[in-house]
Length: 259
Ligand SMILES: C[S@@+](CC[C@H](N)C(=O)[O-])C[C@H]1O[C@@H](n2cnc3c(N)ncnc32)[C@H](O)[C@@H]1O
Image (cartoon, rainbow, N blue to C red; front, side, top):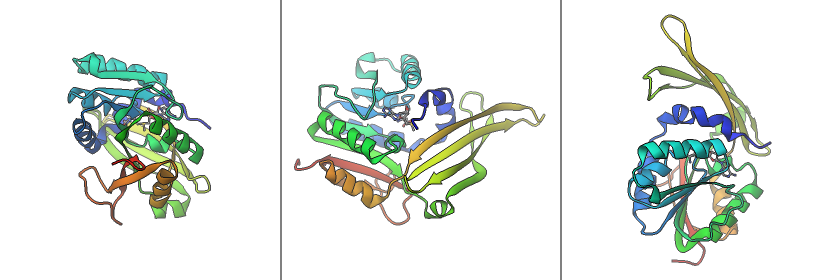
């Protein structure tokens, strides 16, 4: 089943307002090269807009029309130079922008939105066709939690509290879900509630997502079989080496045989 990301557009920036540490990393990586940048699954432009604001030329592609229009709307408020920023509605599994990019980024679970090995392979084939011969593919995925996988489900539980960046309200996020260990897919329902002291609910919504988890050597061999050579795996966005304590895998890969 394909997930409708349009349903996420209105709440995405609020729910993921706590995800910040990857933005500086992707901005630094983009500034470190002279060519153009491509982001796959650019969503609301959470990463795309700061990269453009840092003076880099970036294109974001996303297959959700609502995500694309929200990103364009945000960019018109936040970004002074439209020549450096372009959003295109496109499926990352099948694209050809007829140019070669210096870096192709897939931040925050964009790669994990690909729910099958076939979708991952199709995406990597498109990446290969649009990556400069000495360019880099950079994406991050979470390390699957063995205890959660052993349980086979996520009980209804408190996920975290966030502060609405606009209203300043504290919002409580709750989650629950099922884990399909055969297909390596988590199906999660995330709900948000904010009950004010007067016991009035001021924010109350829920959204669902599906995400595919992958293991370290699985990704390593997937990249190899699709013509990529792994250059680095970091365990966070501060360039720490990946180790057994890491909860994140940040992959940096280049085309096989290029220096
Ligand atoms: C978890 S969000 C990440 C958004 C953004 N990169 C960020 O860091 O906030 C995943 C995004 O990928 C998009 N997406 C999922 N599958 C896609 C596909 N096959 N082609 C293009 N976009 C896709 C979704 O619409 C969504 O905006």
